[in-house]
Length: 533
Ligand SMILES: Cc1cc2nc3c(=O)[nH]c(=O)nc-3n(C[C@H](O)[C@H](O)[C@H](O)COP(=O)(O)OP(=O)(O)OC[C@H]3O[C@@H](n4cnc5c(N)ncnc54)[C@H](O)[C@@H]3O)c2cc1C
Image 1 (cartoon, rainbow, N blue to C red):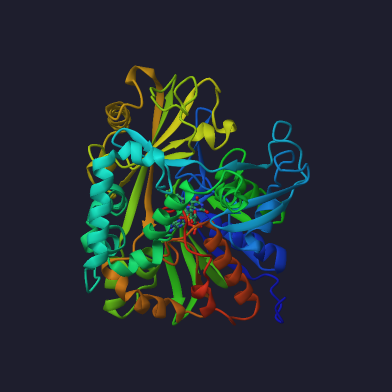
Image 2: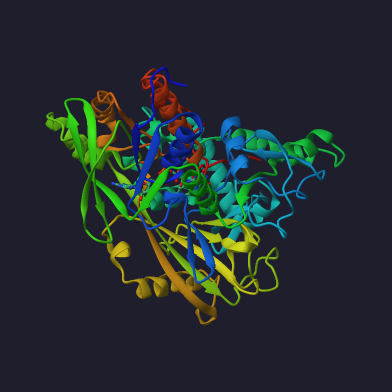
């Protein structure tokens, strides 16, 4: 607790995503400061919200709940316990994810009898390329060789050997990074298309440094050795069994999608006396030198403006917006913040009677078993396909139907973004039909969700981000936290840890404020590219 009297102090929080809501709940749990949360959207949860379309729920991106932070894992389970009956024993469960392990204690009722629970899900995500499914992470096994064909496999092997003999040096671009580690052919086959779809720029224009930071498990040599060694391994080899077990990845998932977590947190905030106003946007900031004194909030329903005095401002709004509102006297800071790059995102929700599939693992109605599928086909724009039924059956109103999310990476205002909703639904359905996954006549319904600034990007003006950060750090009572709040390409756990540190710093009268930028929750795991055997 702080040494000062915090009664009657107000912390304004801009944004009710995971960062803003964590900050609000932690302030209420740990202090007498009143959090007042303003959210421009009509619901809480930020990018981690769940959109309810006629009883079918959409998760924007497919949010796995797993963190290397014990604090985050415990925090989530306090809000929504893990349902019993899903583990090796009735009361405990070991969760493996990204080579990390967490032991969970199961206590809540079984999922069928309670709604306020988290499910344990097994991850399956494959790559769809040449109208075929490949394992993900990419495995050098019989099925991959069969899918690629002998000649292509040999060509990939040759190009890999060539890259090992003559490395591109200096390694400047992401393309150099990929080619040096995989060879040009494997890079063109599995990495170029998807990476460029996500970021909207050629890999030649993304820095190699980005690859080193974001792309893991790159040992093709290890993969080949493992695959070859596997041929000589007896089926009773215990080491192999252990490896396979550790590769079965499991994560937690709220029964009704990620938004259920944040709706419940919002309910607890209100129950403890905090206030959340949705459809209220922070549009201006008032300051005295380097101290925030108030924010101006616009009620999006009535258009009314209101000035709200505050003792602290915890901001999860994009750094670009925050900086503009602070009106820095240094033009360089404004220019850098204004040009920070983002990538936007659209999802078409499609409800279907059945899917068309030659996949032997598909269900009788053609539904693949995957949580999501990476679409590597160069003749379509779709980047990823979510199969919501496989995240949680409770996301789907009628269990006889298939509820899909067709994900597109785009730029706010571009051709895709501006497309009329019904045209976009039709376009997305045609794409899925083109790659042989559905017959459009089986589409029952559809909707579209647009997510601006879904991905803060690390190129262009971002190289000078430190100047913006230094400016923001100069404000005594300002705490930028979260994904866009810090311009960090991160997951919920990082946003929550940053928010929790901001609260700690407020309670310690500003001590540890700079450390918030050093939090490392082991960067995101949703766009990772791995090659393992
Ligand atoms: C495709 C995709 C897949 C993902 N998968 C995972 C995953 O598997 N696991 C995981 O943990 N994370 C995942 N994430 C990341 C996760 O969505 C984010 O890390 C998390 O939502 C960030 O929380 P936040 O509160 O920092 O920001 P946000 O979720 O962006 O919330 C910020 C909020 O601030 C509001 N706001 C902005 N400006 C203003 C303003 N001026 N006034 C008032 N309100 C404002 C916004 O409307 C928004 O609600 C994924 C993200 C994407 C895009």
